[in-house]
Image (cartoon, rainbow, N blue to C red; front, side, top):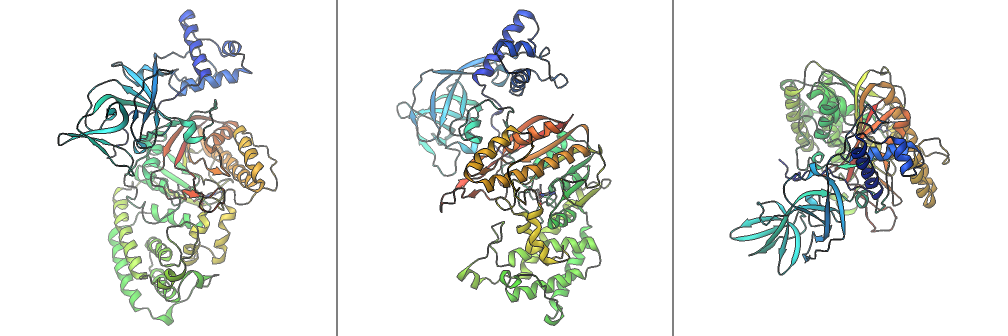
Length: 633
Ligand SMILES: C[S@@+](CC[C@H](N)C(=O)[O-])C[C@H]1O[C@@H](n2cnc3c(N)ncnc32)[C@H](O)[C@@H]1O
């Protein structure tokens, strides 16, 4: 159970212009009993075109100020204004060391009545500091407070202590004292005998610009909704076969399941066009959806198949125990040492011999599904017994004394993984629906992979974040395992995988016909600093655009396509991949219905890099991702 979703958090701050448009519609409606046309809005605000009027309407709809009318995207005649309320922003509140409580009303915010309830008086404060980040309250946010003098244990309150020092903290009563608890593990609680409560937090208005766009404040074409209920912080993510092998940037099963449950139904056929290790496919199997998965990394295909093939746990355990017996008896001279480039650089000789014995014993298993399933534990054993730093996704060799001392217990590592995996398979075998299928295709999603046009009920996927050289190197991560488990005819082909993935080959120049203003703007900013990096970004987006076209081809009309994407930083430029996808997709024949922002509590990806290439200069790459919900027209 997570305690994170304390408040209903989806709330927006309107820009001045949006408020003016909203006021105009409200006044017009009260005079005429119907809303103004897009043309009237255009004329009133001297807008360039009616599509700009439409843009303002969408913003107001997405923010909950106007009703949504999906079937009449060009008319505002059916919209109904919701009751709104203006709340004074009384000043700043410290989410850190207490600051003097000064109340100077300077500005107001407009929000809908629905979102704060009918009862009580409210005021708002701007947050300073980071002591409440684990509650989703960040520096620069605005909190809406309901005035009250008492609070329940665990509520987030405006507390005044020590002669007019105010702070935002969680309040607990303990042993006759008050504990003001920060929601940030690096900070200590404050204890006091007396605390004056000036209200409890009922809403958080995220300063999206500071979180996502580095301080840019402007009217965007799309709206991001922050929704912490998608975080699943602290929840178990390794149930069933989800945890049988590490893979970079895996789906959190809960996110996959919620998307599947929201946008598809039992018996549907879904597709994950970048299926990776197959997390969405496992969930599909568990909740009764037929599923296609496509990926261009052979190790991903291997893992996805193993994760989604139910195996009788008794048979599996029997084969596993027999295997442990056999491996002990294999003599050194009976094994075949694999032959791939740099094997001695990545593995000690002793380790190679043990791995080769293990592999031989696994290959002797006749049942192919069982053989493959145990090969997954072998693949993890390869990674953990190699000379690489296992905490990294790129291949980095350990050095010096650490390398000298490296003496992995190969069979012990294998047993640990195999036994954990068998336990996972036992649950999967029990819970997987029997009457659905999973088909996994080794292919490039920017091309036709043989899936029929208009045949898929829902696409759920998470594309790579960018090219493999500068973000997650799927191929490099997979290379040693892929070489050992023979997923390539020639093991040395394993080093070429990353070049074939999205963005793998930079374009020759920056000339393109992609119809996205957001992309254009990002490319210009990056190119000013580094043209080659801009070409990488363009190549990735050209590939992605082709994938969107293929997705459009296979999806049935009016069905949904959900992409979980990250907005990465390149050369200090935040690329709004979510907006770029929305723009590109709308040109292809989708409508962007939602962009939900979620935190990434535990996703394994490189969180820090050095964008400036200055030693020691670290910058956060990404700790949020967007779920872009598209619908085929
Ligand atoms: C973010 S990962 C997907 C992870 C997956 N959701 C999981 O839970 O394991 C993106 C995947 O896209 C794959 N990929 C990259 N370019 C591709 C392409 N052109 N066609 C198909 N797959 C591709 C990568 O190999 C990688 O497995």
